[in-house]
Length: 338
Ligand code: NAD
Ligand code: UD1
Image 1 (spheres, rainbow, N blue to C red):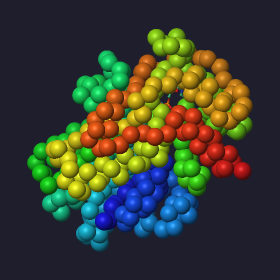
Image 2: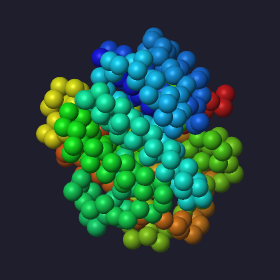
Image 3: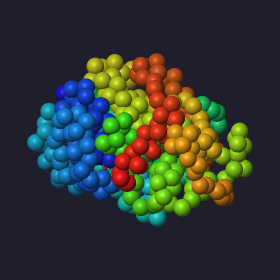
Image 4: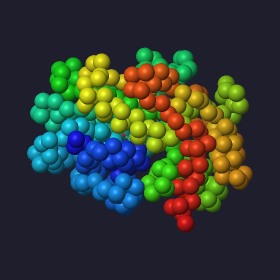
């Protein structure tokens, strides 16, 4: 089975490529290296003993997308990761985000439409729920107005796929709404490589611990939570990667209930920022330098997944604990700085 993985050299994509190759899928990666490097191929090859085909294509270039599908007219499935993901940058440059996250999606779906069928997995996000009214969050919770152009691209992306599936019954799609992916492969041969100052909690913590940042700022301790800091559902990236493989198989084996489905992918456990710091201190055996500062604009108080749908319908459950995921992030940070 030939699977196209767009953005397959990125953080989540590279872990998915490993899981796909481990399960015998033939992988073709498209990536324009805007947030990754070709070195990731070496990591993938050394874990799986197989180098996937790599095409350096910018998916915003419709002509290149077209020629790719002409050359590879026997693709069985597409997992679409390629996108820009920095929330702050999306506020500064919304058109970059609408172009990169939505045009690319449209071009890929157009190719599947031409082909007449295909299995498609889309990287969505729990950001579509905003501050949900009830915890844990089920897939039927309402989608709230987006807080940023980035978040909006995920909402619109889901709508584009849903509308396409309505008219193209032989296109089968699943949108996976990720909660907070963290960690790295246990081999420490692939992991997260944030460019510049990390905006996300875990890379900021590991970079502080390794001495690249002086101090972590904890954004607010006056939220209505058990310790006043925000709650999130941190999921090990390898667990997340495995969810893609089961979702893809569901489509390929025609086990889907409709041709457009949505699943939450999280652990089901909410952890506060201070819980994460405590966990990190334990696995790294050191104190973390942090201070409490004011709230960050746009942060929701709490978001953790109801995973019952993924558990029962996909037969998938996250296996790693928060500490295991933090340990892998720490191992990775130490490896890349050594
Ligand atoms: P990433 O930046 O590490 O990976 C994205 C990859 O896509 C990069 O390798 C980049 O070079 C490539 N890319 C970007 N634009 C491209 C284009 N026009 N053509 C070809 N390649 C292009 O990001 P990630 O963390 O692995 O995220 C993957 C997907 O998951 C994204 O769609 C992201 O929005 C979504 N997501 C991520 C998170 C998260 O916290 N990491 C959470 C929810 C959803
Ligand atoms: C991020 C993305 C969001 C995406 C979601 C799920 C941002 C701004 N948002 O959200 O679009 O859908 O992941 O993957 O990138 N924190 C600190 N100090 C820091 C960094 C973070 O205290 O230096 C806190 C935040 O206030 C938050 C928690 O840590 O409470 C997690 O933050 P982060 O890793 O940025 O993820 P989200 O905000 O959940």
